[in-house]
Image (tube, rainbow over all chains, first blue to last red; front, top):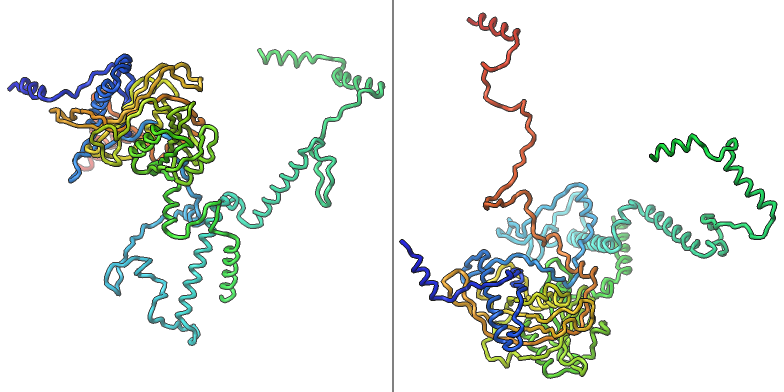
Length: 291
Length: 337
């Protein structure tokens, strides 16, 4: 059965969605944008700007919509037809730089070395007493610390006149303050940088490193003068740094004999070996090597 | 144990005295949960919030500029802050006050409108990165029609627009490329993974004409170049096919811009700003390709096989035997029988 004629008739009822363009459009569907590099008709633009722009934009939008409708469509209940957009292609600058990942805390470092993995705990646990699911911690939670106990048995080795309730409360306070101290320590370590602590396992090591660093800086500062720190006032107990010797030049007008001797010495060094200026054997070998 | 507890308490007290937690790095530590949430929202994140824009008036403005600022603010209804009072602000000369306004309002986009004899009906579009000015473009409004002048149905608030950029200048000219990027940044709205078809309500069309004189000139680079900014609402009608037939109706403000000064972003800063974190990069699926016919093809890597040790069907008759084996075999057979 040939339905093509009927299809054509049906199609002609509606307006076309096809658009002819010389240069195909570029799309960035993540941004719902299309970029048209075709040449515009300048005279039309000058004479009937708005109408021309409207028709031109209509063509461009038609192509963009056609492109969007080619993406995967799903119909969601109560909402309608939803189209899934791809990722954005054009590079648009961010407003803030990327966040730096936090340096690992002491526990995290330890866990990494030991290979301890975090077990995801559920927020609610079943409380046997109450017979219902309560939060593990927090408000109306099944806290295990015993500070809300109504009855506390006195242990065998404890003082019978000791107040067990206050003991539990004090213990909780100590735990809280310890936790707070650890949190502070973690924050400080994150600020100052872990690397120092990692390199020096002990406090003495850290001190020593600081000391050597300081010495280096002092020596650098000392020798950063024109006379390489030679004429600075020496400080008691400080080891004198003999690094950095300046070049010494002979005076222009001096003893002629001494100058003559010095020059002849240099010459003798060159012609030292039995009057030969050129070591023929070595020269041949080198020439051979180069070629 | 009593002594131990005392020592620990002293340490804690000393550490508390050392740190004044309330003011660290000139940022006040939040005193309650509400302010903590606000500060956390302003922190740098991997996936960022929608950019906030501020609309500022310069020391002198004209009616055209005022209307333009309010119209653009309406287009960007959410996440835009309109400054009502006039401020003495000259972005091309001094950007300290600009940095201050943007950091206070946690805004990274701005539009400054002003009017002077030298630069009539002036708008400066700009962006910030990391609290510092990134780039900005100055345009002059030559012809403007406000949203209220065009009597038509407007789109709903907060919709994501479609963009059309016409003209090859947007690919060739550096200024136009920056303008394109800035317009996309300004009006794109929220970053969505999927969008409802009925939410595609309006389209912003930006057309550039003129010729590039040369990219080095800091003055207006196009001789008689204009940028036409038009906003239309989309009407979708049946087309007998999957995609609908589109008809447009002019809705929003209509401007004819003329490019004036530009301040480009420094390359290194721009590079850092456009860096995509690894988590957001599209994941590369290794090994799977689609060949020309359209079949999905992949390699399966099997380990090296020792062909000598392969388990195959054993045919005893074909087994290679030596003479001794043969006689042994015969002798065994003899014994059996």
